[in-house]
Structure formats: structure tokens, C-alpha cells
Length: 126
Image (cartoon, rainbow, N blue to C red):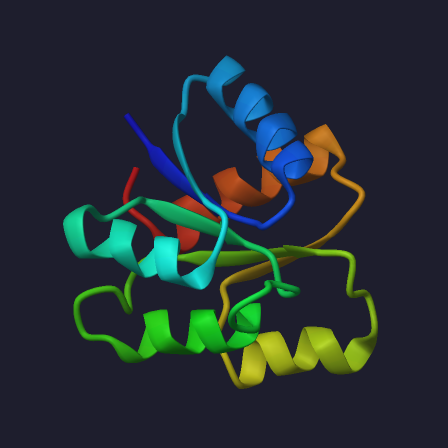
């Protein structure tokens, strides 16, 4: 079963994504901060991470960069899920953090599910 880690400080977003993803048969875990994200990654390896950019304790781009810089987690696909739609934010996420996908909120069911499937097919292991 595909395991997805949602990293977002907004409980409503986490709840919406969790319900949507569980209905599609995904196993879901959540972190509400960078600290929680890294604690989870110490113990298990999700198949994909959905990561918000605007986090309270560490910028999502910095979190992604740290994930991609670590030899143990660098191969986990990371998709940014954020309200930030400016070109500079998108470019920064791909160039600086080496994310594998980018979705602008609000969450559109078909877009998030399609992106997850595409990223897993092209970057992950399903």
C-alpha cells in the first residue's frame, strides 16, 4: 500500500487531504511542523510527501532541500502543495529544493490525485 506523508500546519488541509487520499486506498500520516516531519522520517519512509511551503518552524523549501540532501531520504518524491503561485516560488521549489511536483491550493481533487499518480509512476515506487 502506498504511504503518503502530509506536511502542513493547517489541520483543515490535512483533514481534507487525509479523507480524499484514504478514500483512494492510500495510507496517510501527517506532520504539522518540520520537526514532526523529520521525526517521522527517522522511523519510516513514505512513498511520497505532500509539503506546504509556508510552515511555522521552517520554510517548506528548506524542508524539501534537507530531505533531498539526506542520502536516506533523497529518493522520496516531494510535491509542494501551497497557496504560493508566483513563478519565483515555483522556480525556487524546483531549482533550490529539487521538488518533484507543485500544486497550487485550493485543492482540486482530480489535480492532486493525478499529480500523486504521475509522480509515483515517474519518481517513486508503486
